[in-house]
Image (cartoon, rainbow, N blue to C red):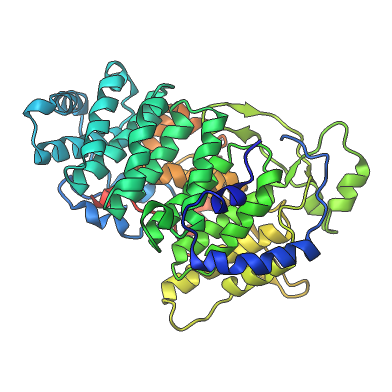
Length: 496
């Protein structure tokens, strides 16, 4: 069982933001009068830039069309005609390991080349005998932080090494140095990259359940203090990264009943942020926690439970829960397809719904048109899940004016010419966004080449039939237009 997250944050002696602190007193009274009894029978249930671009551009937001994962990526893939990449990778590895003869600029170029090659090719075989040495070389650059670009590229290289190598010793060897970069670096660009890197190394580098819980508490501390706990006060990039990686780690925890109330309160604070990326990441975590309050029906569940937890919509009571897939490589476990409510994820859902409704219709003149549209689309989908946790991310969401409820088709992502992946649950959406941030234009290559970390993180792809192709062709124009409604706010190394 994970610790009481908010209490640990507030009692740790670390800085808490004024915004979070000012609300705590009023929340205590609200919780005392409003909290509902939870069930005691809870179950466990791109752009691709050159190697020479500056790392400061990492903060650029990148819009991503979810209608097709590969069309634009493959068109911009600088490696698709590079048949000599294994030789180039071998040379770059030797440059990285020969640190005594290297300069800062030389290491930057070598790391950038490693990132490019490891991103656009599945390099597991080529790096297999060098994993330990490469980890040591990357950690030296992270530790010494000779330049922001070298350090950030070393963190990205370490991420790609971890997602490729399937080595269970990485976490224990890198955690101290990466955590120190988050706490002590003078660059918020490095801090942000290190937050993402620590999450990947934790989930894919051999960390156990206690370590995952520890890092979730660390990230929650960053969120609750608006970045002040790592000396990055009010830095939206650091807070967004911590929100995204907390959500990714939460997908690995089967039962979040004990943590849900405290975590949602912290995320609600971030809904008032002036940064849309922070707001959306917080909202997605809230939707995930509501989703996790429902689990598949088990043999000893009474029929009354299903009827009691339904909302009168017959389709919802038959909502299918896909197999659970672990980002850390645990494989899939087949379950029943009927979802049953196990507990109340938050004590005041009606108030939360009102706040989400405001964000889904916000018309503040100080918000850019782009951010306003992104907020509307994302929070309409988030609100839909909070209202009915059986419903995951929606695509083409629309309001039924008779019932005042939002409905829409389930999100589908096209991979290659023949593949379609259904993203009908928030854990899938969070996993997909994480892989998209790490692999970017190389995602399809890693997927089709059998990268185990990628395959274990996502649902099985469904192959399109000829009829599906014809239907997809008819809808292609509409899909491209609708795809623009969704934006992923990431901070990618492709702007390096």
